[in-house]
Image (cartoon, rainbow, N blue to C red):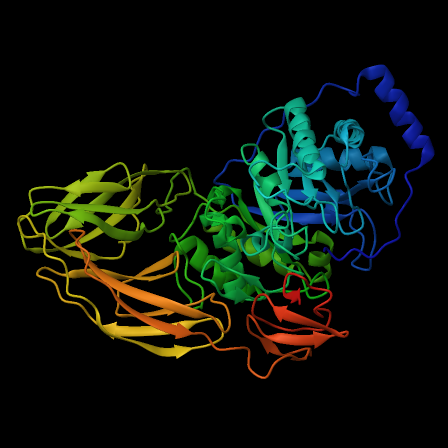
Length: 611
């Protein structure tokens, strides 16, 4: 949650009475809704939350925020008739309504966008029924229209969103607090028009954790896990950007199967890449959450050590951004799935007030960094990202088929150039079949992207393909000497002697039960297995012509949990399946992590499963 230490303020009755009378006589409009110019997708943003309260970080008049901020989220509009009533209230703090409205208009005259943020740590909102939904819509129309906000930000935290039992498909949610929110947001957006802005600021618990645990389908896990996913999916077509809070987070398992802890470049890269790549929700391959556009991704960070757990130094943030937006590796543990994304939108911080408290370290340093991605003098000088994962998808004696992951660009990719030897071929899409090649001959291919301004990316990975002999039907030899080289309670490592082929071996497939994995070298480590369980692993080889060898098999049983359960303790590294005792109960570790005070098993069901 966002750090937010203040007393809850009751909504003044006089103002509430005025609102009700105004609604009755004007049909929910005090004046015609405004249409606001949207922000260009290639504009790099610094977004900040401005406190409508004083919690020790210091009060700032709205018009006096640092000019480095492009978007100001006014924090917060909160429930005025209880968590489940749906009505939302907002009263400017330490100023008059007239002065606050003047400040909003002043910032807008400077080209800034001023958004009202709903919820926060103290403002839980549950739209449990149609009446609550309608109250939400009508009161939000009153707030937005009265103060002239450019849009609104959904910052639902705590228990605002959750799943009812059996709500397992994020594409077709059934829980009222989710379906009513989606419906209400759409009505508000339709009311104010296409230029009205919508952003969201969920915690990782409600988004990325949904890759490992989805609250509507997993057994014994928190029913809030991943509960923002159906909201994001249901509103993605009108969502300006998603600014996940990369702070106040437990360790999260990323797309490489490893967990990452906040405060590091690896954490920011891994969490952002999940939204840029997409992932199977609850690891169900039949429920793939589609990637968002790069311009819909903003990374949320604390402004200083006082404003939230997981503060990350400027240098560490820039390491992560250099990899995410430029493809410049820092040698970290996480590897991007689809290359760099220079089109990413920017950074968000909690908060503007804490940034000023910290001498503007966040806004000044990150503004300077993001400026390099802006075009200057009307001339676009930013190259597209490098095409990722160039692979051969097939070959004959006279042709090779290639495919690669699309590049991204601050304006737009116009095409690709495939090169081999002294020859180059231009193509609009992300695949090509090159004809007129010689049989049984090795060719090395690379590809680069280009944009309308003529900027070209660096070269992709190189792929060497040896054309098949005419009518190649010869399968590779069977992988031999298959053996187990190591195992734990959740993994088995294998190795074997490489196969041979009349042309070349393209790779190997390891199969166990209904699962399989493809590798290019004669080794593999199979993870995510159950402790003390026997598995039969079968390895086959294949060549580029699609010929597959016979298989060779071996059986191995994973280790049992060593030494049985041990008492839980803080600052201990726990692996998946490890048993601990706490409060007289036994728990099994659901995802590897290093424990901290406050992460006791009874408090963190995403990390521990009660036995």
